[in-house]
Every structure is written in structure tokens, then in C-alpha cells.
Amino acid sequence: MKCLSVFSCITLLVASAEASAADISTHVLDLARGVGGRDIAVTLSKQQKAGDWIEVARARTGENGRVASFGDSRQFQTGLYKLTFDMSAYPNPQSPPFFPEIDLVFRVTDADAHYHVPVVVSPYGYSTYRGN
Image 1: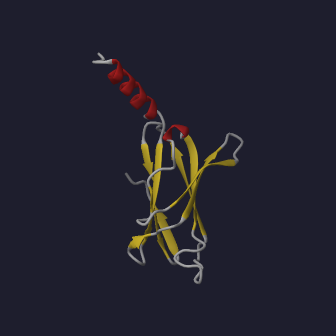
Image 2: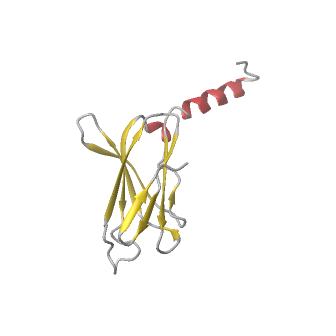
Image 3: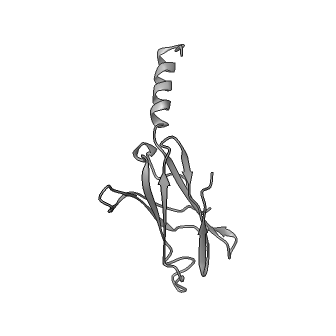
């Protein structure tokens, strides 16, 4: 590949360096209310070789129920990850949910891929899938 300028070469190097790690996002969809689950604390953890979990990022869902990014994607390499959703105050603190916490464990196998892991919630259940 030929570089047209020094700037072009640097841009190509930076772009390829950023693409060398997985990108992880999530979305909380409230099936009962038909809206995104907003202001929910979400913790992203990675399983270590010894089997313990270490927190790598924290975020809160936005107005539309999404966490678009957990920060610098270069930190996410292959392995097992866990998204923990704190549902204890959702949809409101006066009516505690049946499932106060949701843990979703998933495997990152391709360090160059995007992993979108949404959760669909209702008062007495939840479901998940790999999105895009």
C-alpha cells in the first residue's frame, strides 16, 4: 500500500491500531413500556485466568436505553466478559423489580469485531441476544 503523504500514513496506522480490539455496546429495551431503559447502571467485567472477574468499565444507559461505548475499545481483548445491569431502581424505586440484577456472560472471540449485547426486560423476565 502506497502512502500519499506522511499524514495519510499516520492516519492509516492509527486506524489499524484502533481496530485491533473488540468494541462492546449494550441496550436495555423495556418490553412492557415500549421504551429504552434509561439511567441504568451497567458494569462490564472480564474474567481472569484464575476465574475471578475484574471490572473494566462502568456506564449508565442514556435516554434511549443505550450504552454506545464502554470507553477505549483497545482494552477489550478476546475472552469472557460479563455485563451486570443494576435493575434495583428500575423503572422506579417504589416498585422493586423481580430481577434486581441481570448478569450476561458472553465470549469475545474476534478482537476486531463489534459486540452489541442488548437485554429486553419485562416485570418478570428478560431475554438477550447478540445484536449488531
